[in-house]
Image (cartoon, rainbow, N blue to C red; front, side, top):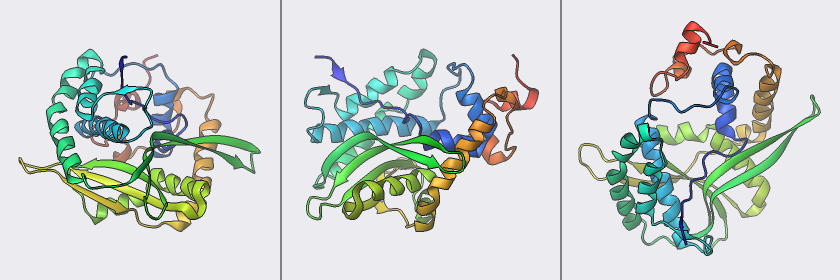
Length: 281
């Protein structure tokens, strides 16, 4: 039996898509409405390391559960290596560079949390809801993929767990995530799905060690945001209406944000030159 790699990618109609539209409508259009091609430049370091560690954790918890009894899973360490090898040839060396560090960090993580007793209910699970827009008499399909669904073995409460890798973890980190649409969406869906059994959203934080220091691991609940959770539906509707408004416009002519947080996040936006000089087509 061939070994199975848990490599889900983004959910079908998720927050990542809508956040791009809200961050910069033109970024959304150029990302989703133009022909897809592999960039010559590999992803930024945080994205590579995060992706590698996510797949390692997925396999670690997959092997602890009975969710994949019909499949032969890679070990967490081997899954990290397998994902690096699946990248486009021009990107592979960049991904491979971080494989040993991610494998070592995963081993440290497993040792650190070796006494945990959570029941694993789902791994990389896609959550799906329909959001109705009364004004437009339209329904939008909305999805989110949750890294891990846990049930507490004593209380029976259900938690959505999101793995976050970072260079530095602090109270500001928690505050930033707590108002992020991804986490607001988790809360909106979790409350509807589980009612009194809903425990909340847990951040499973992996902080890389700097200068040869060991990595550190933290678990924390996100801050409550009941107002934003109650009104998150309007955020989804607003983004979907905007997408439909410009549906027939050529992607490079969609409105742009023109702000450094949109044009230069981590590094220069891959469509920077398109906004600078216009479409080449």
